[in-house]
Length: 445
Image (cartoon, rainbow, N blue to C red; front, side, top):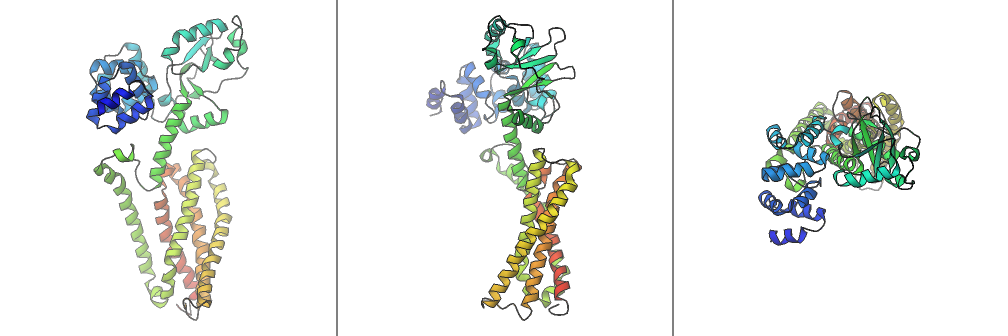
């Protein structure tokens, strides 16, 4: 069946071939790749969606693996090599010609998540003195070895510094004898350094509506370019990682159905154990108020409502601030502005929930659904004011936690919703029973 499927996909869309290979067991996928033409293997490996790319590369004969690395796009080849241990990586790079090997080693040297790790060295650059006809002739000659030709980079003939960027669309509107520099827009190109974080690169793409951005050194020499598809892949991967962390677990790092049972347990058990230990503080808080609970059992009826409202408000604030920090909408220095904004927001939201909580209690009392006792008005006031305090604390704690984590060097996405909920649960009980002690002291307590 695999042979028939492979034959049908050998000349079809590369995305269909990748999907077919991903559904096969590793041994069968490696055997299927070995039967494909070399050009077709390159198309498959150039897709980031290809699962187990590093292991599949190692499974190929050495000559086939060497040719594959030489013909793949440089940035994708570097991504595949990053999946492998250093010894296996060096063994694959050793047979390559000096130029491909040195380019790949340079890409691998950049920190993961930086512009340097995302860029490709396969771009079109030209001296700023060339004509339109010369530029088009050069593009025809190198097109097959370049990842994209939609943006061309005009360099200073003397020092090689980047002067201008011109799109292919604008180039073909010029006359054959016209200087390309005269067609380029008279503005400085948008550039990034190799160390620029991928989040900042993504913001530049969105802000300037770019298809590619050049990566330059301090002398404005073009080291490579980051294309929009590479940014999208990186942003999707980062978004998936953050979503999993925000759910209270380690990032899986691979598709859900492909992760092993023991690995899944390892990724999830750590956070669950930490959260359980945190929730044990809730029991300690309730034990501290044991006397109040014995005297006013009615207060226990609203503990789930109190805890969930505080956790929900904290999770809301945390979600908003994690995203705002990721998009650059707020900075670490803006923490006090956020606190001043969340203070009235938390009070207003708490008041709304307090009215609803107290109102529900009073409606149930007056309608005869449940008897909360002779002091039901005081109990309603306790629930209402308790919700105000808890929602206010949840909003402030949830909004400040991402700032605190980023300040000490952690990813703000580590401020997971379960973690915030656990934190607010414990403090929420303290707030609730403290309010009860003040309002119900001398009556129920």
